[in-house]
Length: 93
Ligand code: SF4
Image (tube, rainbow, N blue to C red; front, side):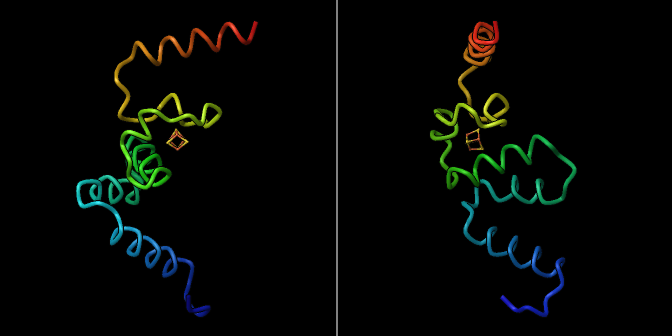
């Protein structure tokens, strides 16, 4: 990377490189996240980024301490999330 680049240029270049690698079906999610107007898109894009765009890995994420885990996309339903919250409440006692 050119050391003469400004921070904005570095960000722009890194994002362009990332978008070239992202699956076309997820590109709009990344773009929406980069625009900065959607926290939901940012979370979705971050989980995609974290797993190399593997939806099943996001659904079955085993990073139990990740702060995004309860908000991650592609879960099977709220019942799973609800049970997890209840289990955590038991731990806190
Ligand atoms: S919830 Fe899981 S998939 Fe999403 S960012 Fe955290 S570790 Fe990665």
